[in-house]
Length: 100
Image (cartoon, rainbow, N blue to C red; front, top):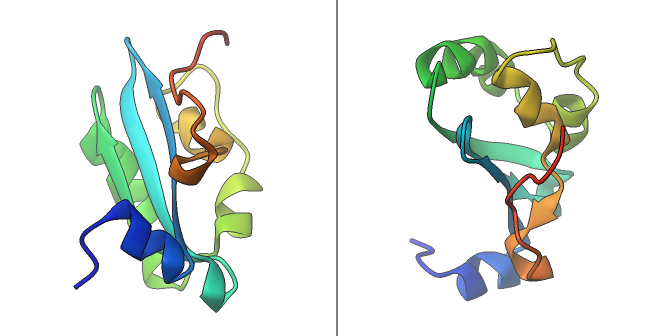
């Protein structure tokens, strides 16, 4: 079991995240060593269940990070934040969204 960010990173797994005070937090766990295979999607905030339901089909079909970010986002929805996941934990950047 990989429990720390360092262990995840050394295994080729990255966490992409984005947060917004009004929309919650969204994180995608990606295995870079397996061509960007999405290992999981974490969503907190408004409409989290509906977002997860929509992406569960793609996850079960072997979704890759490229598939995820090339999906059209419907505006204005909380789910549109998923396609803009671009801040990795390793980057050290603040994942909080500051503009629309």
